[in-house]
Amino acid sequence: QGMLTGKYKDLDHLPDGSRATNDKMNRFIQRYLNAETLDKVRRLGAVADGLGIPLAQMALAWILEEDNVASALIGASRPEQVDQNVKASGYVLPADALKEIDTILG
Image (tube, rainbow, N blue to C red; front, side, top):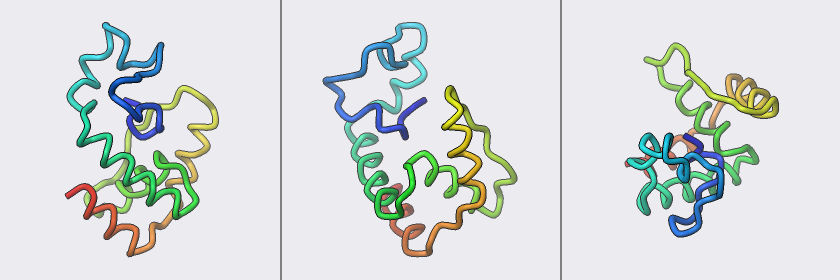
């Protein structure tokens, strides 16, 4: 949905041309587009910044760390997004980062 790209930072200023402003697509993102979720994304972004990796890459590395997850479905609209996703598959998150992520997500 693009929530982890940093595209959506403020509910009052949604980017023109984004899914959130597209009447045909925004029904999918509306359930996530709220102040609580944006705050969690902001806090997760700070963790990713501390690790020196993009938030979307950290999120993918986090889900792939789960023992009961065999694969993750990704979406990419640009080649560099595919490159980031590939890097995430080999990235091992430090234990303190995993704990902080779990705390943020509740």
